[in-house]
Image 1 (cartoon, rainbow, N blue to C red):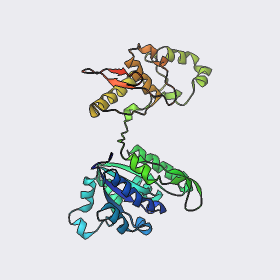
Image 2 (cartoon, rainbow, N blue to C red):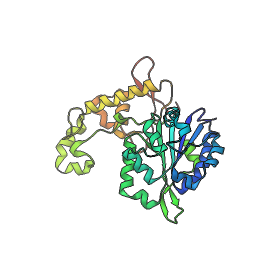
Image 3 (cartoon, rainbow, N blue to C red):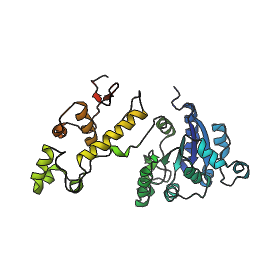
Image 4 (cartoon, one colour):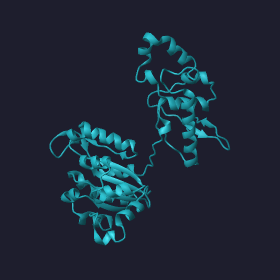
Length: 305
């Protein structure tokens, strides 16, 4: 089955040795049914020729922001509007830094600023460059802005080093593009204020009474500087309703925090609010919920449903 049937993907090719994988990536994406247009940076053209990617994609490769033929029709804006997804592979440390700064000094970075499409990056660089605090800060900022980062992978690198920094293989990247990914900020964990990051055992030393009150009824007691559980519940349930509206009739995999799962399960099971913290949610646990018909309720699925 072609999982990317008719999906319109702009593939951005940055200037790194991993650019050689972009040729295989174009083929894999097309095998999945996607329509691919390629945009190359000047550095990318040093590692692989536009002619190669033109032959594999079946379309001319876009290289210059100020191409008179393309820009007569505002080519970079047309590409930005055309795309369902902008996938940059490889995404170098320099390219990530320019994206963080909002620089638009070539066709690819300009397109990123102009598009409303989902943007995904496949980082590829030397392991020391990936570990550098500046690169890690840039990666985190991009994630916060809604960019999806796939990789990097660990292994041997062209320079002889070993570690994180290899671009993911083309087949894995193509497979990942077939999964719709959304970030829902309102499904974040309950904020515990002054208790944030501290274990129950640590809190027992000096805060045992307050901890006991929280465990007895978390709705009635809020940790110092923390988020009231009623507000936490309101935002989680609002996010749940939005998910239901957006994905009616579909299966959705929700990867979230223990507190969110505990709340959703407690409501599905009809538990009184003071029993919320008695709901057991193990690390990596998987649960199923099914939307009720004609109402706003959710029901826990039995095994096999």
